[in-house]
Image (cartoon, rainbow, N blue to C red; front, side, top):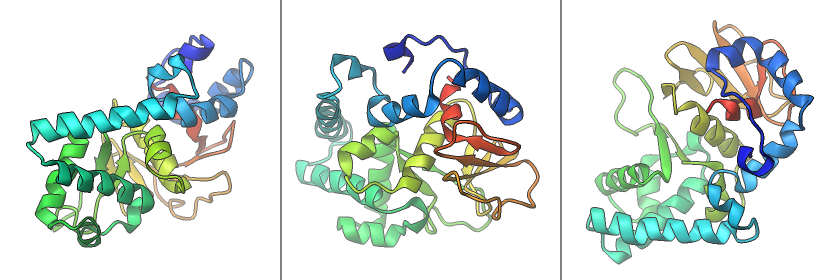
Length: 243
């Protein structure tokens, strides 16, 4: 959005957001309406070619996905065209299922592939920057058996690949896409994410309560549809100013 609206904002660091998010949000509100800008970003803000025209943005993004799959993935990993169709279906399955409900065996069955083949396809998609896999840190955990969380790489991809988008997946996908650049993100069974093995974060809508993380030190609630937060309740949009 800095490109479109010619905004000059200094990148924020995570600790500053956690400690001073209310003051930061209040100062930004004096300059523009952050939620309005955030909605623009959800629709077409992840790739700079939106400057070529918003109406053609989704078409261009769809073409790029096709090029990545049909040319890059197919060539680099020597994948036949019929298998590329399966990989494309896999992307749709990932959109259709909330991250915590993913089951690797069911996902493999839906895609019509073995578990080992599924792992390979997920690896291809991650290396192609089309998905992000958030690993956990559990003892005796089999790889993706009770799966780590899997998201599309950014929220604009959901607009292309699935019309009935899960709002929880979109919120978490956005948060991950912003925080992963400079921080370690892990899936945890308390809250949604553990950041740098220090902070616990729960993601939700503005009416989300602290029930799941209320007794956890260094825990925060990151919420959508809120311009200014308070205490440990932080607006989701503000994490888009980290880089």
